[in-house]
Amino acid sequence: MKVKKYALLIVSLLISAVMLFPLYWTITGSLETNTQIFRDPPYLFPPAPTLHAYASAFATQLPHLLSSFIVATGTTVVSLAVAAPAAYAITHFRYRGVTFLVSILLITQMIPGVSLANALFLIFNKLGLLNNYFSLILSDCSFSIPFDVLILRAFMGSIPRAISEAAVVDGAGDWRTFLSVIVPISRSSLVTAGLFAFLFGWGDFLFAVTMMTSNKIEPITVSIYSYISSYSQSWSDMMAAAVLASIPAAILLILSQRYITAGIASNSVKG
Image 1 (cartoon, rainbow, N blue to C red):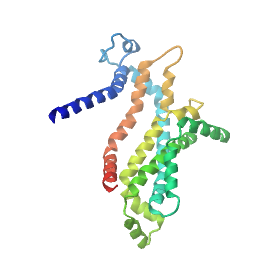
Image 2: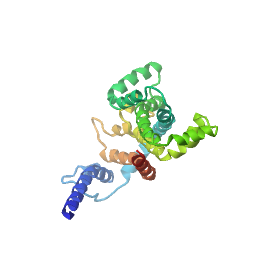
Image 3: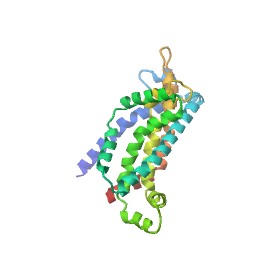
Image 4: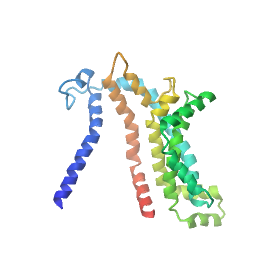
């Protein structure tokens, strides 16, 4: 039994090491110069760590980090504002076609992003909405809203109907019941759904490169590619920018870990 346990531990550590090695290489590369990065054999640790790449990347990429934050925040707000009432309506109101609607939501997750990006580009181009946050937020929401509805539906479906019925008996309407009763109970699942929406908006590249034909407000995921051209490649600056772009998402994951764990646990127990 112990041999099996240690073997599983070793395999898990090896898989973790393989998965984390690109992150390690990015961090060490951001602390080196371009010459040191391409040294053969390579350094496992930076011989003379420098923050020059971070200073350069921060000065250059700060506006693009702000753009990513605006897009991710907007995607989160819009997604939750639409997905939470939709999930509540699907789970607590009896009407025909609910199964069909849920099937449509699942199908939307299977649509290739490239196909959707091309269609949205044609629509926003005709409406004159390219190169602004509005078009990019709506594009990201086209994927995050169906996903958030499915997440919230799984939790809200486990809330006893008697709770909402008791609120109605006390004189609360549908919206009052939703805002005053269902939302507080669903706090952990709302944080989980909001986190997924934020990360999707923060890390989106496909919609960003499609909807942004100007580099004025392009997010960090697109701006990073400016370090690579036909004539020069600033790999250390690019790695530093990648690390800076990962920090907000990592902090958000750490801060919301308690709510995510609570949401998953409650879904598994009640489901």
